Image 1 (spheres, one colour):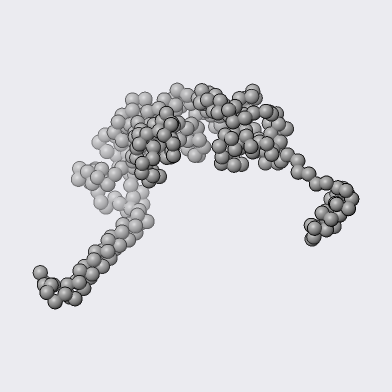
Image 2: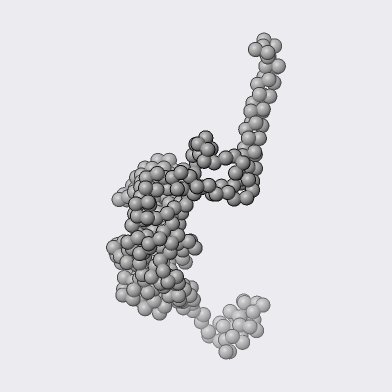
Length: 315
């Protein structure tokens, strides 16, 4: 209490506070930081992460790796150094580890990933398995070459000459992650789809399922796979497909209005459509931009011809 009174008395001038400490023979020391570690560990407990990882040493190491990634986006070595200034032992009940322990823990996580995801899934608030799954993929490039899954492929980061990996994320209807899977960098979007079906049915026990994916994710082969297991899907179709449906008489142009319209095709597929005013503005702006570019090029060409006596502008 005396220390607090002293600090409040000199809060406007910290140099006076330090001088007072020197006079009294007091020494200031910084103990191990515990606030952030304790907060994140309690949040992980509430989210079910602690229960999913387990209470043994590997579970605690994995929990620290999660917390370290939140506090500092660094390497395994940086996570060890980060622990040196924090009360990890008091907050997590674990002491004495180095970067080799964390790398070994990554192997443990890879071996137990399916069970961990299953435990997290079981702690969802919903009483039954979800009937809508959201799925998409992304990729990330690698600077090094020594990675079992690194390969050249469609690089979303536009880093030419860099190998990459492909990452697929499966989520429920609310966007909560259920599973993540890493594929070789040359894996196409479509090839990653079948494993997600197996997870939804086998691991998560879903019976009535609707997959939601973009037009590059759910195509004819994937629709066939979904139909084979009795699952449904929601996706977008391409402009070429829309043109084909209009030509076949399944869709009519007057259906593209402000209000939603629904058409059922001969194959039992339901098409939900409307006119998108925002998209119409984008297309109009794009056309105007192209026209402006062409006009500028024509003006520049005409100016060049007019300035040269031997040029035949009419020709």
